Length: 213
Image (cartoon, rainbow, N blue to C red; front, side, top):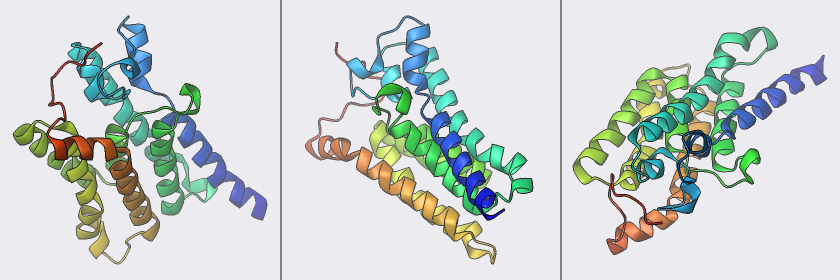
């Protein structure tokens, strides 16, 4: 019985990682006959770099599917986890696993994206209000400053704060969820290290700018 209790969370985390490992920027670009997003611009297989190909439809599809896989990983635990003893701790672990899968996808030689859309999907699965607040922060920063990376960095910094201000003030705050959200934020900052340097030098490309071949 004890072994089964440890098996289900581990299996759920593995499935979350595998789901996160589906790099939709690469998959959609192949289906649509576009250049591999890992070969131009930031060489990141995410929606922002796919947009630099000039195909807005591919970028939107990438954004929705990358976010959707993070959301789905969390929601599967919400929908079906309770009979197997999978509560908030497992939910947080699975969401983090899906996010890590996007960063280091086993199906694409561990070369993945920066995780902004997937993180937003995970946050929305954890709490729609948390996802809305974080997404709104990204949109506001992107609209006024036209830098996807700056918007992502700002949203990443505020996500744990929003969680504490929202669910965190309640007695039922999950420390596991807070740890998961904080870890995703730190990984987002780490994955944007090059962008931080370019922002400081004033060489970071703005949203909508096509990448060079």
